[in-house]
Amino acid sequence: MASTIDGRRKGACLFCQEYFMDLYLLAELKTISLKVTTVDMLKPPPDFRSNFEATPPPILIDSGLAVLENDKIERHIMKNIPGGHNLFVQDKEVASKIENVYSDKEVASKIENVYSKFKLMLVKRDDASRNVLQRHLRAINDHLAQRDTRFLTGDTMCCFDCELMPKLQHIRVA
Image (tube, rainbow, N blue to C red):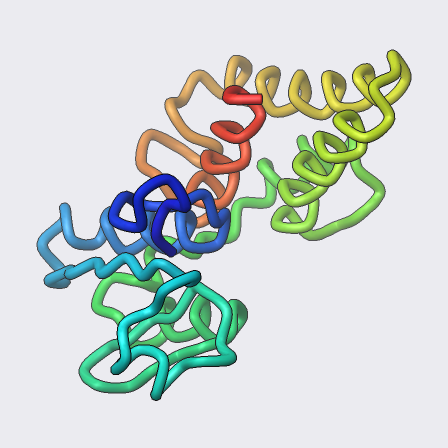
């Protein structure tokens, strides 16, 4: 998705940023060739409009195949993109460390929970919601400090990091 500032820069869509990070990491590892095309959703080009008019971003096009839904994009990266399966690690320690703060058992939903707590804090603007967000952020920070790694599951990025980093950037900017 293109930025609403000028229609050319990368925009602020969390999902677009997450999948871009996944794919860029694979491109850096030279397992894929990556071309990113931003689209100003307010003024999409005619060819985009005719093919994807009602489809919100992100849209992944791989060898002519359009993948349009978030869960299908993630599955496509994992199963069809060379090296993609390596991004989607199952790390029980990450899951259990973060589970202590969250009631949910899935790491992805826990990371998502950070952003929902952030949005709630922006709406409520009270100490209670700020404290809940800070508790979630501290749990992630404590995990990283205890594990002594650069990323959630080790010294290389994985899908958890690619999902968390855009959310942290939105929090940082706000």
